Image: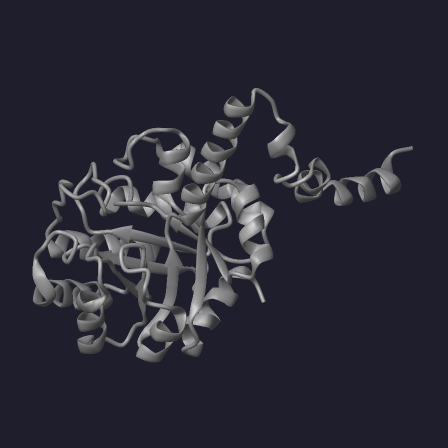
Amino acid sequence: MTKNQTLRAALDSGNLFTAMAAHNPLVARLAEQAGFGGIWGSGFELSASYAVPDANILSMGTHLEMMRAIAASVSIPLIADIDTGFGNAVNVSYVVPQYEAAGASAIVMEDKTFPKDTSLRADGRQELVRIEEFQGKVAAAVAARRDKDFVVIARVEALIAGLGQEEATRRALAYEEAGADAILIHSKQKTPEEILAFVQEWPGQVPLVLVPTAYPQLTEVDIAALGKVGVVIYGNHAIRAAVGAVRKVFAQIRADGGIGNVDATLPTVKEIIALQGDEHMRAIEARYLK
């Protein structure tokens, strides 16, 4: 099966699909090796890797080219986080084919205004577009895809904006009606009760997508048992792991005045060379260099 078919089949099967965030191809390769079903092309992680806020600061071109590089580096599906779609429905019509051509198997688009503010910021500016406007963006994305197995996921930010369960459900159903293949429902509450209430009352036919960053106590076993969730995304753990590890190693080197103590704790250079695909390159050399 193609990557698109793999993701589509997972959604149709009712089995829980797992996606790990990545901000570059090396991290994506590590996620694949760890056994995750797919990659989340995180706008938050990519913004963080450039040391800028997750607020539409980076250009679409920067994000698109990273998605292209990630998709080329792994054999599992890539779900691209395209924030608000880089504009209105017209922009979305042009954007979606570019992500599809870059190798993404799905896009996630959220119903905030442009420029957005990151969802998990405590005092973030969470402003949503009109339901009808976002329905048009979803419909434009669906119409613009070339492959019927390319997945369009609509992200509902009503709970993030504090608008309550009724508004969240109203928006989710409207986006399903517009053609969304799945609904990502997001919450920043520190416990899962708000999300569980939404899932349990969800009357729609398409599967839900959860990002349990704020409520990590909800496990994959718990999520699968809900019966309505098709995808769980771990949205920012790669960049957090990287920052934590790098900070620790750098501090140790400064404290020691050298690298003697940290060297034994790090992956070897040989391991990094292997992750770079050195074996594949050597095979090409052996066959073609004359």
